[in-house]
Length: 445
Image (cartoon, rainbow, N blue to C red; front, side):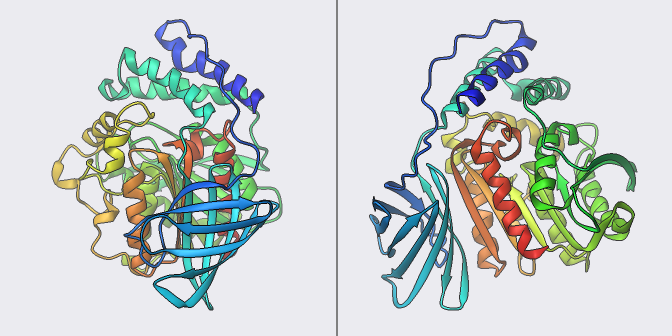
């Protein structure tokens, strides 16, 4: 952890602050992120049966025994054991005492537990437990540099060109960390609705044909490209054993809505029709994306449903934006400034890609507002505790579940927007998110 912290300080000092020709302040010492397994504390959970009524659980641990009790309203009462990072609990919901169920959890780090629930023979999707905790120390140090740069000129007030330069400088921090090996990387161009669409293919080790993950990068439809998500794409290919097809869609303001979405759907169709040419399996396709890319992964899932294909086995939505018409959620107010992605950034991104306010409620950019989510592919939704998009991402997970879509949601404590890909070199939580993704995709691939 110390080595990662030191590399982060050096990398961010060069990449985030150097462009503005000011000296980096001395970083204050920070304690390492918790290493010991300790579940004792107050956790927030959303009950799968009633996702609209979150409540608080108190977890107590004595040796290998664990008990859960609610501190607010009716909720499950559970008892079980924890050993080797695995949590096994038997629970009884006070509202339905005749229907006991089991919880099986994986303790990912000192602040998060991903928990799957099962009642009788029927799965109850996923509960999520997130310990009430502050920012991870490494994240705090990174934010110190970012917020220093923000104080000079907020990103939301910069031109698109300045935004892209800023994010490119930040991405240079990845040069300080080794990239995960893959068997091959190939850049190609495929036909699109308005010219060719660049894409990058990451091929894992092994013999194909491989399942294919069509990946859409984040960046508010303004910044970002496959190169900025290179380390994540490599790790995803290696962990899943799947081809990662990273799409370099058109960006705003040069190309406004629905240009990026049209490219996203065209790329999915091309993969389905030409998978064999890249050693892929057209019967095993998933979509994934982060932030704006997650919004497009959700959008192409709906388009594929409505247009009769291509068949998508799974959708992975990382810190998704799901309602571009409403920036007044609790998380928008709580994290409006100081936690990397700010409300001002989101307003700027919306202005560049969606200059016509009539488009803000279009389900392709606001999937939470879609009339129906029935019949969509199973989904994994991962949100960050300190993210303006947290609440709408979790609302979308609840709406998917309510529509009968097998949905698993995981909120990671102590982290910020973009942690799933942008902090892949620094944080264990980021690698945990990839492992969760690989575990879920293994069941469908």
